[in-house]
Image (cartoon, rainbow, N blue to C red; front, side, top):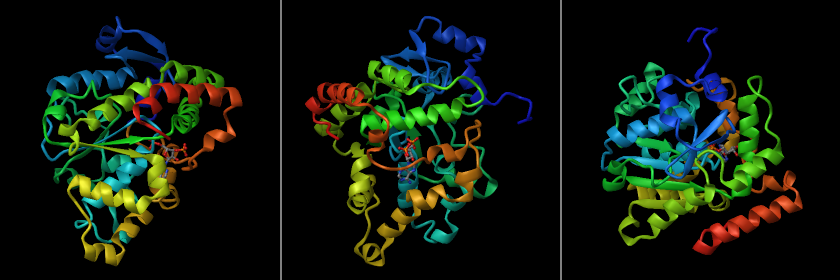
Length: 339
Ligand code: A3P
């Protein structure tokens, strides 16, 4: 891309929409955005207009394979971590050497494409084509691992009807808020004004955030996962659980995805090795994640900040915590989702 061309990121943030996209969103409810000027509401959820365009196209044209793996989350739930973990465990026989692993030179986002960001020019979903030739062959392999922030209701029917697996990653909304607020300001820097924490908080509590309302997003997958016919299809994981008991969660994830660790692998420490490879300390210090960029202009380092549970304590006032905890209790805890 020529230096003087505005990056897709600039277009996102400044809401420079092509006419077809203007037409698409013209009748949709609109609110101020976080990493974009405006968010638009579609099927009950708030989306960036470019991602919305992809969503509508994917709803019409995408065909899931029975062995596809979907990693679903609200932005800032730890998607980057889950991508690294899922990629490493599914491909561990192909890449047994962690010194020379694709994660050493590729961001997790390059190895596990975003459903909504990786449409080719014919509007077909194709895995990220912007990889170096050495790693592009990763995507001709099976199963495909695909990540998305779409709500359950908006998933293409073919995803719901196929036997593909869905891993839903959830996180304490208070930490999602703080993480997303930091992320938004890094993305907005030099393009539009900073978002204050007060503004972000009000929007978040109103449900106006990427793929929000967060409670409806989480509940959509939670309720589906509770249905007995979906027990083998949807796995619900919490960021806090991975932090607290990484070995157990990784083994459960491997089992769920159909790639269980053998006794021999466990004895050899393969589970620990994958956790170490994908740890915050390791990934966040790799050259590709400190200085690399995503194809649409976002720097890879914005996906690594603190990687802690409970950082909200350093930012939210007592009143804010009370208000958000009430929302969490009413909308989520009552249905069985606890943090
Ligand atoms: P914080 O901002 O709280 O640090 P996403 O990947 O969905 O965009 O989420 C980003 C959040 O996950 C950030 O949270 C980031 O630091 C954290 N994160 C990224 N990689 C991680 C890893 N390997 N282990 C733990 N947390 C990670």
